[in-house]
Length: 380
Image (spheres, rainbow, N blue to C red):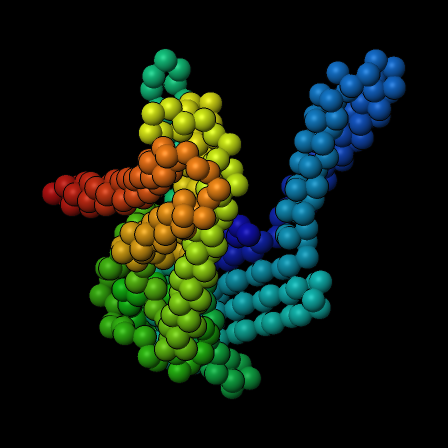
């Protein structure tokens, strides 16, 4: 949810009334357009058949989908209220969730703020690049970039200890806040850790490694991040993360074993129907589809696992190989060239997966190295 500001000291998510009116106007137009197109589509279907009505239904569905998406988006600004102010007397935060009927108001006077901690945070940014060729094409992707997170630790007007935070994507906005805090005698500390997942608790805040802010950030705001690394995690968060990684690796192993079992069934009941040319399956067989299907499923398993250790692809391909070779042993196919054809399939499948996986890893490593060298060159 985007916050609006005019002076970098007052932030709100509330849209102007004219903007809300424009949103609902566009939503109504696209909704009515979708309904009209569906009516015309039904009429076209009854009179002329399926042909042109499919196009009307498709455009109508897109129009209705866009109106629904826009409505859900604007509701976020109406159902949740954020008002943040760095005023003359202190930090003032007001949050209200109309759906949950929850409300929170925090006011921290400057003289009761123990310290302010500045750390790193991450946000997604759209990055566009023009690719030249026969036709110029613009490709857009979302990349993680570094931003700042300010955590304020103090005692509120009701003498209750409070820890609150506020993100800054703009460096000028951040230093405007720093200037206000310094003028009011608030101690400012800095950490090179990312505070993305930091719980708002005093004990957690005290355990973060930090030092007095000397006017320079340890990171470049707006710079691309290679990954969400250097995130500060409590011992409990680390235990939860390690447990999750273990569970993901265990599930990955089980799904790979299941895929190996599937290979056994394929070799037994599908491969015998394929023609064999010399020592390999013919071009009109389903060998390419089976290879593509297997490689795609293994990549999907790794996608769900998240982190994959360097040796796990080799281990998993060995498991797949066992399933394929066991399939040869129990297969009813009596052709003498069948084992060689299946072995050829196994070599191509395993080789293709390992080549693609480690090739992508090497490419990613060189890309990170190139970006690092490029950043170092810009400093000179």
